[in-house]
Amino acid sequence: MLKEFREFAMKGNVVDLAVGVIIGAAFGAIVTSLVGDVIMPIIGAITGGLDFSNYFTGLSKSVTATNLADAKKQGAVLAWGSFLTLTLNFLIIAFVLFLVIRAMNQLKRKDEAAPAAPPKPTPEVELLTEIRDLLKKG
Image (cartoon, rainbow, N blue to C red; front, side, top):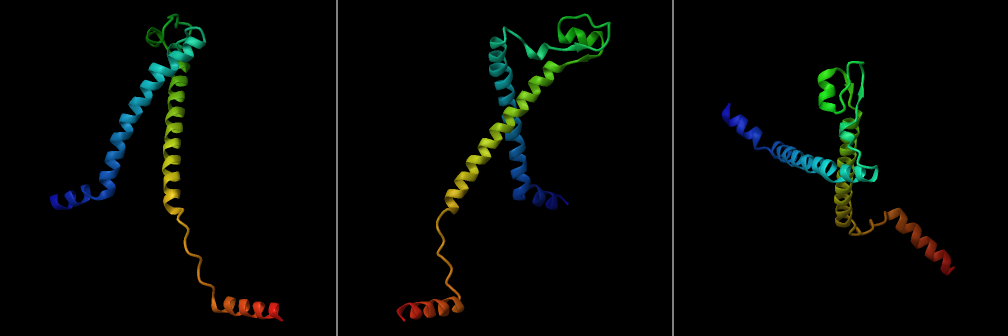
């Protein structure tokens, strides 16, 4: 049983998947930092110092706090600022992955772009070509 598990775990697809998940998690952390520490502060500066992650709408009259953490303690809140931040995070990740996949596809196309030799014409096509050439000579 241990031997079977080792064979399963060492298959190329499983190892590739594990590496992909680990790199994906690290990449997600980088993009989260990019959004939270670089992009959102710039957007906040452009919009007059707004911090989107702290925007919320109270869903009950008991919510009187001015920051999201305290408002959540008071009752139900619609934390649309956090949702906006996470949506922007997702869009950036999706766009970067699109650029990476696009670059990989372009590299693949360059490798496959070597022109293949045209296929040899069939005997019927060769015969028709000869007849055409003879008719031209007349």
